[in-house]
Length: 181
Image 1 (cartoon, rainbow, N blue to C red):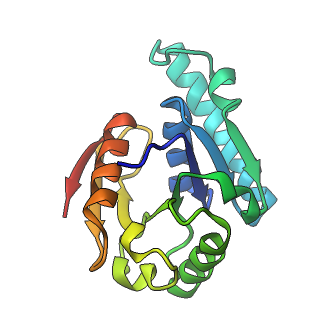
Image 2: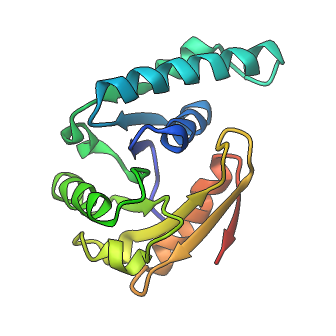
């Protein structure tokens, strides 16, 4: 099973920002990437407010600042190169997803696992945009990601058992309940 230390998140809308927060709160290093600085700024603001609320309720094991320090914010997809597990969460536009995945695939280690948060597209079709069909999986989070426990895990036609096992393990380390669909 692949050990995951750094999680890359591509797309920092509502879902991507929530996924990044969950990962950083679970003590993973996070590389949070979006093409637009405005999206990064909004994600940081939303996350800061969310972490402050969780902290006020005594639900964090450390300060919001310590959690935020584990996140590298970037407009450059190249910064994903060191990620062990990459979660794509861009808008539900097939060609955009395929383009972003192909770009990240060219930069990341061949051993890195890629997941898509899609709720609409075939995992096999998205995996075809990469050279890692065996290390590609669906990881559909529910909104809001920082509260909802369920993650639907969807295998593509070529997803390996090791990728599935690593993804299920990661879900549990993130404090989530995976359901294989």
